[in-house]
Every structure is written in C-alpha cells, then in structure tokens.
Length: 87
Length: 388
Image (cartoon, rainbow over all chains, first blue to last red; front, side, top):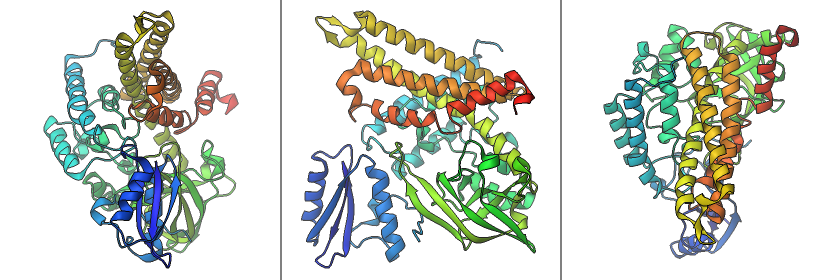
C-alpha cells in the first residue's frame, strides 16, 4: 500500500496514483500498470498505510502549485479535492 | 425512563438495520477498505431511498423540515447506522443527510439565509474551528487566535489545528479571543467565509483515521464583518460548550454500533472456527471475552440512552453526556480489541473491518474531549462548583 508519482525526464510530474487495500499486486503492481500507460520515464513512491489521504494531499499540493491536475490524471477518477495554500 | 422500546422504535430500528445490511454492507465489498465515500450514483440512489423511508435529515429540527424524531430514537438509529466498516466516522456514508452545524439554528435571520438554509439544502458545507495548537481540551484558556475590532469589521490573526473539512467548506465557525482578561468570557464565535483574503488551509494533518485527514488553518489579517458574529461578542464559549455536550451522545452511539457489529462477527466466528478439534466457542477463554463484550455493550447502551432521554426531556445532561462518551468509547475499544483477538491473524488484515475499527476507535477516546476530560466533568458535577 502506498502512493507514487510519475514524471518525465525534466522531473515534471505527470501522474499521481496509489495502491490501496484492494490492489491485487500491491504498490508494485499499480506502479507497473501506471507506467505502461504513461509517457513517464521516472517515478518515486512512498509506502504508507495512509494512502488515501496522502494521495489527496499530493494532488492538492500539485493543484496549488500548478492550478490543475497532473496531465495524466483523469479528473473522473479523482475525488473532490480540497483547497490547500501551503504558503 | 421506560426500558422497553416502543413498537414504533422497534419498527424504525428494524428498517435501518435492514438498510445497513442490504444496501451498505454489500457496497463495501467493492470499495477500498479505507473508503469513506460512495460512488456518486450509489449515493444518489441511497439518498432517494432514505427520503422514501422518511428518515432523511434526522437531526434537522422539525420546524426546518426535519422528520421530527425524538432524541432517544435518533440515538437508537445512530447505533444501527454505524454497524458497517466505515460506520464510525461515516455512518451509512452520509446518505441519511446531516443538519450541518447545529449552532446555526441559533443564528439571526440574515445569517440563516446565508449559511443555514444553503447548508440544509446541501449547497454549502461548514467546519467547526475551535482547537488550536495550544490545546483543545480547555478552549476557554487555550484559544490564542485574536480578533480586534476595526470599524464595522473584526480582524482575525491566529491558527487552528485538527479541523475537519475546512479545505472543502464554504464557511466555518471560528472561535477567537476578543477580550484578553475575561477567560471563557472573552471568546467570540465568527462565521467565516473560506474565500476571505487571509484564510489559509496550510497543511493536511494525517491521523490513524486514514480515510480522511484533518487540516491546519492560518488566519492572516482576515477581515470579518461584525454582521458575521454568531450570538454576541464575548459569549462564544457557551456556543462551543453546548455543541460539545450535545455531540457526545451520537459520538457514543457510533462506538456502540461498531462494538455490536464486531461482537456479532466474533460470536459467529467462534462457533465455526475450530482449534484442537473443538469450536472456539467451547473454550472458556473465548466465552469470557464474548461475555465481557456483551456486558460492555449493554452498559454503554443504557448510559447513552439515559443521556439522550435527559436531553430529550430538557433536563441537564452535561454529566450524563460526558459519562456516555467516556463509557462507550472505552467499551468500544475493548470490544474491538477482543474481537481481533478472537479472529487471530484474520483480525488484523484488511480483509476484515476490525483493523479499521481498531484504529478509528482509538481516536474516539481523544476526539470530542478525551476520557480524562470527561472524568473531570463528571467529578466537577459530583463534587460541586468549588472545583471549577
């Protein structure tokens, strides 16, 4: 269980995802699946049991910095996000 | 108090129990084990169903369109509504609707138009901003957020922590110190729009409750009109205090519901799981755990219903509310712990709801006033005003 970010060569974040309690092959499986469907060349991950709140936090920080979701995150699959102003 | 439930109460309980078991529990088989929201289409379908049952907006006073259900029956319903995996913090995933912030029922007409009615229609959401980094159990002294009068406005500076839902809310109730030397008499409640310049949600606070986070807020020269004061200047503590007492009854009810659900699972498991050639249920060690569960649940249930009964009759219920919060949260914790023990390794997997209940139940002994504060409230009531 955990969260991950996919990025391009210039470290621009393209996608934020998570592996939850129903992920068949865990974080490795979710990450591998996401990489197959992405133009990303880099990734990072965090193992955490707070995958749902950490996932939302990463997206909220991204939205606060960029004004919208990461380019490969489909808005239909993303929960309603809160507004964060990290300062 | 009559210990026998009325025929109407029995019917309502049976209806809600069937709803939880036939509509909510099956959906959880597909959701993430930590989820606290339904898919939008499922939510819409179930809200419509609850409205047909005549139980939508349970806690809304009848004069505002609520279903006019008494406090004891609402408590019995709350015990039923929490009997599923997400039930402790998201009973029935909110499909029974909410009353929003109860303090707004005491607002003036203009404030009701702007905040209460849109909230009851589901168009606006509010948050309750009391706890600060300096403390939450003693808000009268711990509140350091300051509000200074400036013409027709007040200017707020300070911070709040462990605030739920502030990042998605359109407004919130923020308690601030408006007089330095008056203790609990120097606190005022402001209704704050979250798009006000100077309002910041600075960070997410992760907790054991991994389905939902709390937030930390910061107010920087946030200008709030005097018209947004709820109640009177320097009389905000009573607003906070009343809410804290009332909230303890449904808070306790949720713990009892989860304890019942866990206990029922443990009873069934003990009958079918065999060790050394005999069912677990035949072992005295297991039987005594189940007996202790039964006693814990029954005690918590009656103490909570008594508090609800006193509140319903308009009698003082501060001590009883503290007692039911204390008893139910501690009993619920013990019951869930025993049920995990009975289930062995399965008890700590995400295949079963126990691990979520265990984490979330631990928070219940702290949230809405920790056990020690509840004992303090009860002691003051027993010993009299000399200890205040």
